[in-house]
Length: 81
Image 1 (cartoon, rainbow, N blue to C red):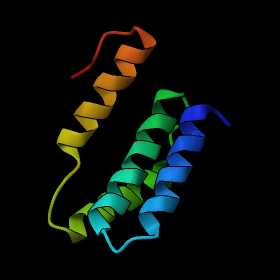
Image 2: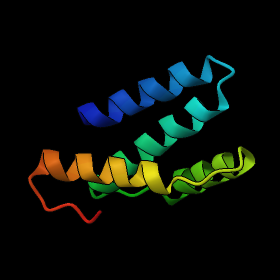
Image 3: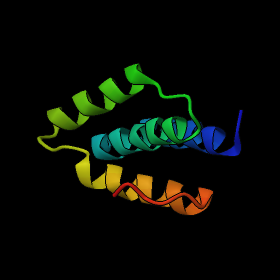
Image 4: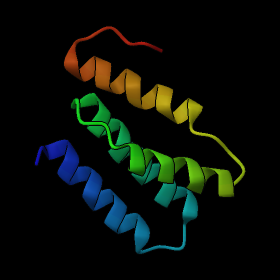
């Protein structure tokens, strides 16, 4: 697994050890965006992110823009934000 994927799994594990539902959703969003940036999108994980955020009454649009801008900067590709 890539370093980003391993870091995302650790973030999910750490967030799940708390009662912070926002952190749990955002850790999964980071994992989903990391997987998508690596060319291996995980639709089930992304659906879980959307469901968790909907339960909190918010969307991921701003966070997705941040993650995609970071991924573009790291890869050297132009950002789609």
